[in-house]
Amino acid sequence: MFVADNETKITFKGCKMKTSSNKVAIIGAGNVGCTFAYSLMISGIAREIVLIDSNQEKARGECMDLNHGASFVPPTEVYSAGFEGCKDANVVVITAGVKQKPGESRLDLVQNNVEAFKSIVPEIVKHTKDAVLLVVTNPVDILTYATLKISGLSSHQVFGSGTVLDSSRLRYLISEHSDVDPRNVHAYIIGEHGDTELPVWSKAYTGGMLLTEYCEICEGSSDHEKTLRKIFKEVKTAAYEIINTKGATYYAVGLALVRIVGAILRDENSVLPVSVLINDYYGIYDVCLSIPSVVNAKGIRRFLKIKLSDTEVKQFKHSAETLKNIIEKIDL
Image 1 (cartoon, rainbow, N blue to C red):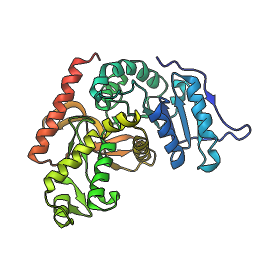
Image 2: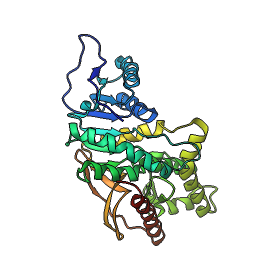
Image 3: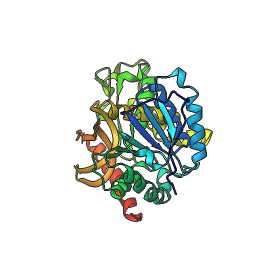
Image 4: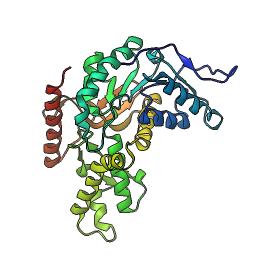
């Protein structure tokens, strides 16, 4: 599917930059891959961005467009290449795959994208076994698990973007309801990045107060549980609504990826709800799900075994079982 071509660098003559670190390879020059490349370029986090796609001309054109804004952003070398462009990358971000269609769930995508990954992942590891692999393509939890199996790499080195975006949607909607800055809201969506995801209301905080306590002092608030159910429903259906209105989601996920990749390149030890291989957590084993995890230059340092309420444990187990049932049916 993806055939490596000779590296094509788009740089100004006589002005090629020398970079030796903070290299990010992006597999897939679609809406998500290119929006991420644009956001990453603006952030200044990466010094080198390589865009890899089976449509080599499109990737080359995207890089030309990005490079024409080079005078407006921190120094960043942007170019297209074949899979050999993964060599020496700190992070390889996989966004390539079949698009989600209106009315289609993320899980409906599974088998087609697993087949695509059987072609993509071996090409990546042929050129690097040291990079952190970040899976973005949906259904991200299944494809993270598939990437682990196909690549043979460590579970610390391979993980998915998970519910980082879902959690950001939750924080935004809580902030809108509470009339506070979303950066002062701390709340997570965990489990599947999809229909069986769940909010961890028992660990949701606003300004150091439990959300349930904060709601009691909110003006105009009466039925807190009804409000929280409404907020979560909006989070869970957000992607479907965006797909129905504009065809795809890519702005917010591009920013979410900058956040995750920044945690890797800067060795931050940041806690993010990414999709990781779960073992020995509430009796759950051998499945990739999102749970708050410590992310640094080596990938996943560890995932955090947060204490959930009885209801949340039940929902989390349901999410795990749903994904495990699908994994059993796919050809890996």
